[in-house]
Image (spheres, rainbow, N blue to C red):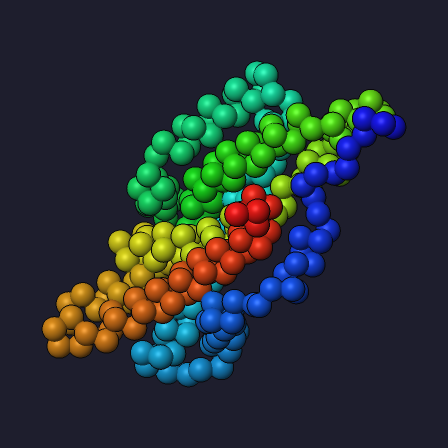
Length: 260
């Protein structure tokens, strides 16, 4: 067909380009180190400072990954549906998204965590309930752009239903953006989880969490500064590593940035 156009965004070569670029050794090394520490933490005995930081890495990394996966799955689904159907469906879903995004994340997560009680599952759900709106907004905007392209119209003319268009054409074309956003948001979730634990609404004792460890050391800042310093340093390193990795993925996978 003369007017047909090729799939413009979903490039199999985009992931292949990852092999052509030098890997971000420093952030990957930091993340790998903390992942190994989290896996090996049960083999460490005692309640010394180092072992508690190791155990705390399990809480923070698990909370970050699980929360982001839940929020991104639900948010991406909302964004895909809103962008594809448009009209009233889009209006209702986006008003719900706007209402969710209007609340401060930490404040609303704190209210939810205090209401349902402090536990790992409640913290994950409380953060995910708020964080999904960001994914919905970003994915919906990208879907609206894709809906104006010729290959979507051709798929509809060929008889493809809503599910096929969304799953075979729209979702693959948003994966690059979704991967970058997920990577960047893991560090953000770790900060939120640590904030909740610091305020006493996160993971309850005796499970060590970096936020609660910092809170425990507040009374000993002048005499034992390391009690709060090293958990804070661990948070800084992990969040910085995920942010650097996310920036690298964005520069590698984002077609617009590659043209600059």
